[in-house]
Image (cartoon, rainbow, N blue to C red; front, side):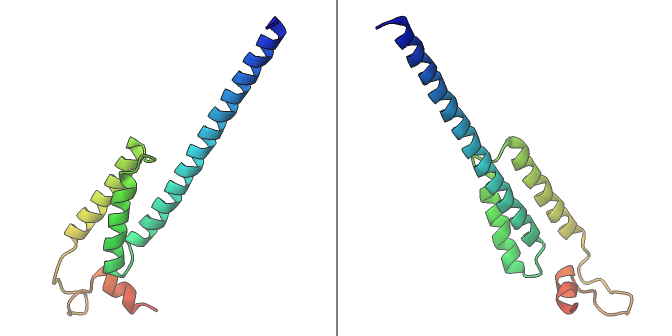
Length: 115
């Protein structure tokens, strides 16, 4: 086989490898972008007035956080928000009276009462 044929074969092989690597990177970026879209959708619903929906979404976030697409930073990000939400829920006084002298409503009950 002449040298020119070898050069053509090598250049063609390198071009094919380059295309495959580029396709793989684009595919991973698209999948991570979709992961992030799902995660932001879930975070928006964690503060839902419907407790059942909020619990379901927290389970979804647990699955999303364990995904291969989530980096360590992404998983830590989900964990920080979850911890913040849990601590904020624990800090809410239960059965405390509001300024009107009646029992204070939770944030979910107040949100339901507002039009």
